Image (cartoon, rainbow, N blue to C red):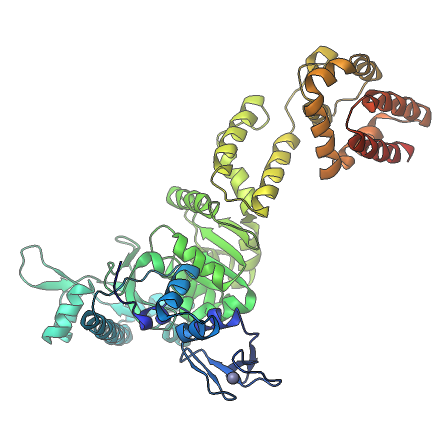
Length: 537
Ligand SMILES: [Zn+2]
């Protein structure tokens, strides 16, 4: 597609800190961040990054500019290439502008929209001061005046026309319509407020510009949360509520908690848990996740335990598993049905909140196991088989990564470890002859099955049959166990089974004979060494 990139739009969707800190080691000194200038050689830092104004400046060589300028300069890229790099690296959603006039118009329009939103937010804030009902609602939730002001909380009263009356100027009125703050009446006769009788939360982008509004109903009479519709400046899938107020805390803690409601964010902020954001009423998107990945490596995704919350958490789980999760530490907190952090604080008090919250938090791998086990009897063979089949389907969506490798191992071990219930069957040699040895050992081990000498002797007698048909599988299995740490499990089997030294000697001989004839000498040697150590203890 031909056209122009809107540089200021790209810069506005980035944090210059993220871009510069990848290449320059930045330290906080006073109110700004400094580091050694990458554009000239120096021993004491004169390179400054101003987060409020989102530019860098070097007092040594005079280099100066925005995030795009930085990338252009440091990687010798053209403007377009620098834009492409930033768009791809940070998953930004920006559109190209087909001509310069439109570009300027768009910039001006963006500015007018956020300015109007600020006026509307101020209007709602004034309304709040006048409503005893709204004030008491906020007070009841323990929110201080300072925190309410920090999040620009306001109130849309029950009036139908107040916004149109307040902003009667033609240009402003048409922007109000475009931003969805007022909507057309059914009979086409004028416009009415979208938000009525709601606590209003302005939604700010990374730089504090108001791009939309969320409203929480005050009397529980209708839909709990309502948002501005998507508009020229507001894309719900790209933004996160609370990012502007909380991003420094998130970076400092290297941990972020994503919750469902705006009130949750604010209430948690109030009790000192400030590394929290909320999605904007829609399913969490890949773009939002990538934003969170840039802010921190540790993430907790919190959901209400009602059916909608459970569905949302499962959808998010599947989405997360399509991403490369190496270096990330992801957990889920699914609260009991009808509970959200706001209500949990109410119930247990701010002091005990963290402890309770922790109890509901589990790692992504355990969350996956929980999800896959729903409605399955994991103590039965068919339960395990269905579980494994569904797990395999999910595994296909994971990109190659260390995370994938270890997830596979972890879940595999979980399935084997789960004990079968009421195993009465006595295993005999013929039960095993058609199975690879790693399966045999697993069945024996995980069912507390004692290895009887008779059984081992029979294995030994028939080793040629094993090797002929199952040789490669058996050697692979032994190799796998040796490398991946079955040693512990062998050890337990032996310790449980073999009481006296004489018996140990006997078993060692049997095992040694059993494995002696295998062709892969390296595996055999390794096995012998490991096994002798275990048995000689
Ligand atoms: Zn410099």
